[in-house]
Length: 280
Image (cartoon, rainbow, N blue to C red; front, side, top):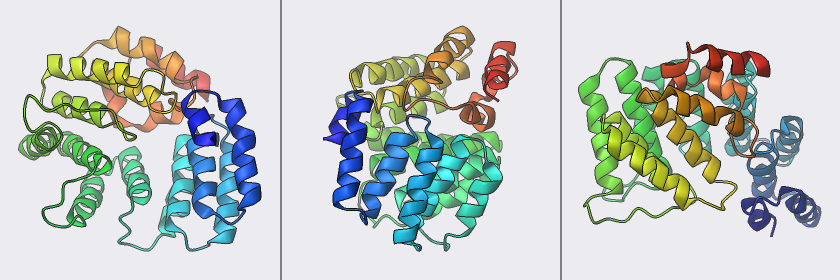
């Protein structure tokens, strides 16, 4: 019920149900992780999120997912050194989605693009031969494309973007339905990586519409639309979306703006810089 209520945007009603669930099963590490990263962190109640994750680590000190989630929370508040320290505790080779996402974000924020590519390649390589990539892994493939682009490897970037488009929409008739991990927006980013402006913007706007009424996933779709707008020089539209995304649950943080290279196209705009300065 807590999951349903938060997705409906009824956050205050969801919280007591999360707490009741933890009261009934206080050693459920997955539940504690969800409460921290998919509830308190979405509400920018980062102290509460970190406290819950520390509680989860007391229950399961060796939980790589919990350590990774703690790193993600620290990244979202700009404590990159602390996040790096949490990730250093994780044994090499972990390929679960939360852990990979935390390592990739850290590499991006540190602008270690070659490292991000290695992490994604390890994740993709862990998928059994012939098995389709899931939507989260597809998003990593697109990130890989941008990393190659930022390194100046245009051909390698193109291959990653084309792979994602082919996997997600193998035929023009393929319908890309919304899922829990933003697959329609991932497709839009892949189009953007290929320089297909009209397709990218249309797909990104379609994704925002598809997630209407979903308080968890629509902000993510709006973020990717703004990033695509920034990429193609629609600066006013991109910057105009940011104040809302800095306030709405499951939106952006100032640290995301400050460190994510996807915002580089508008980074020098005084309005963008003002948003970052105001949040420090």
